[in-house]
Length: 379
Image (cartoon, rainbow, N blue to C red; front, top):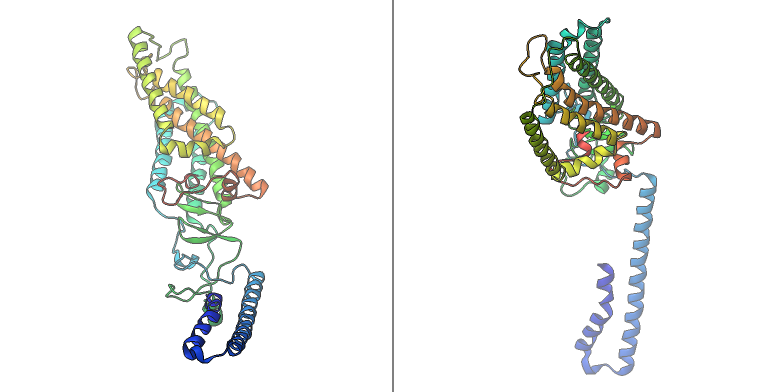
């Protein structure tokens, strides 16, 4: 702006001389005035250049001294603002807890008693301990401090004048440091920020990453435990010599099964093309063993649809022989495939010294602002 103003100075000055003196000036006087104009303009430009050089040198010195001489974002949440828990109660988090408590409860009350009678060892106690540990680390991941720093002291007056913005009404606070990243979901700085997990309702960072990985491993073990025992119980109910359930492959049952499978395939195809699936599936398929797990899940899904139609398992249901364990196989298998892959993924990230945020960036993933579903937030 200054340079533009001085660039017009000679022309303006010449116009003033002409209008003031007009024809009274001789050619020599006009040349002398233009010489003085040129000298004055050169001096002004030299002063302006020195000021620009000094400003650039000051900016370079400040930038070199510290990357965070500027203030932190206004309105962020600090550790002092959290009372008893650092997690948030959200709908997805509540739903995750409901599913987590419901399925093992159904398994231990309706499936495990009949199965334990056939087992030589006490696997019920083992399962209950595994369930309790998983619930403990689920709660710890959602409640402990993920690495949010305490509220720092305000920046001194001189630094405030340099770093505060006109729209800030409160004193500027210093940035906590380059080890901290801002979580947009919770509006707080987190040390070693990895991602925000919707299922636990908390950021994942340096403070709770070990709890998070332990939770993933324990949940994968619990899901595998339920899948294996429920599958074994379902198989024994069809085994001779006196099976309580029998296969009844009648033509009309097979016809209905074929129609249901066709409808199921059509539904899955439409789901795979929806906005939700096209956003989530690519990230899931990046997990270790995702392809093999997806094939296994599809096979079990078809079995879950077909077996009740081509057998008498529904009509011959009682307290000892109920299909609860059979219907638990599919969702628990999905959890086992998903969380074993996630466990292997995060263990590899820990070994490589990376975070989920860095890994997603290396894969070219960019979060869309205002999107309804965020991939990184789902895990």
